[in-house]
Image (tube, rainbow, N blue to C red; front, side):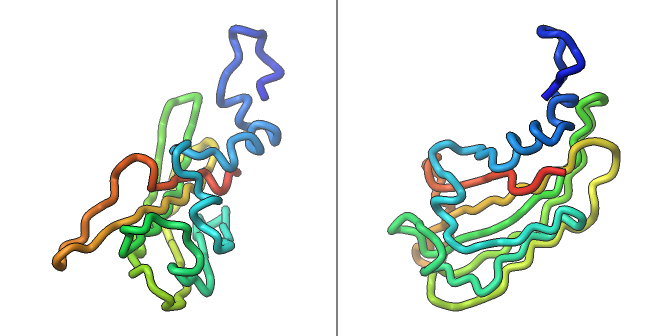
Amino acid sequence: MDTINLRGSRKVGMGLSTMEGKKLLKGFNFNIASILSKALKASYQVDSASGVVRILDFIPQQDLVCPASATHCRIESAWSEIDFISGAIHSSISPAVSLVMDKTKSNVVLSPAQAPTGFGILLVVLKLSFFQEINGVVYSLNNGGLNAIEIVSVS
């Protein structure tokens, strides 16, 4: 972490620019009530150079631990660059992939529209959300404990 500045004057950006800081940041969950690794059992690959996330041979009913009421899931990613010196944040969000909670196998490829621009730390975040279809209308399950979002790559 920040080993240059004195205690009380340390800077987040300096700490996160170190290998130790990046290691601590990777795997950070934004929702303590829903941990991505507990909900998503499938393996995924992250290309930190392009921001692309791939989940191959994904079967929602088999590869997710989900609420009993969920009929659909949505997976999306974001590729962000955060400059802690200037405070600038640039992000590109992938189109979401929505799937029915069944045994259909698919390859999920989440590609951001463009690379974030600027200088700073690059992060890839993966988000998993659940939905319920009632009478042809799909509703988000938003009780706070169901949707997971995690930092899956830091460079």
